[in-house]
Length: 114
Length: 112
Image (cartoon, rainbow over all chains, first blue to last red; front, side):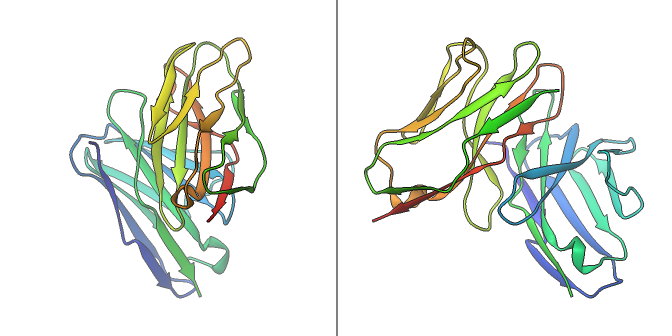
């Protein structure tokens, strides 16, 4: 089956630093990848949609300069949280899909900013 | 726009009880419907799906039927286990669109 990995699975960083999260499709080519944010006991909030080789499309209210998304290849997308602050602490989940509508989700990355 | 409404949780059951988690949707056209499950500290796993009216998705004892007339996709299981404790998300995607629209999730707690 289609497998999506994320790295790291958890990360702790200091306020003001930047952190990069990787999302990889392991056995298929992901033409589109999605980044979600999930607050405790809440649903997933779509942050942005990225297509390989083009700029990401951000959802309303998501700061483009703070959450940098790069979809450099058909198997890799990265989310960089720049100048992180405690309010950025959250569970970040990526998903990926090929040509069909079905998305495959990564296991998530828990970010804690101290 | 498209939306998904789920019953609020938590749903608390004893082992071997019958489970129903209600899900209704609003969408234009003919969406595909999904149930995802999220275990503590993990990402989402696709539990089952249905792509057209009257389709029944099933997996691991769970099932849900795509009811266009009532715009519903209720999740059921005849006998729950402690290991079923998780958060369940109902979702839809409209043909031609990329975005999954999620419900708010329903937490299921199963006690021995």
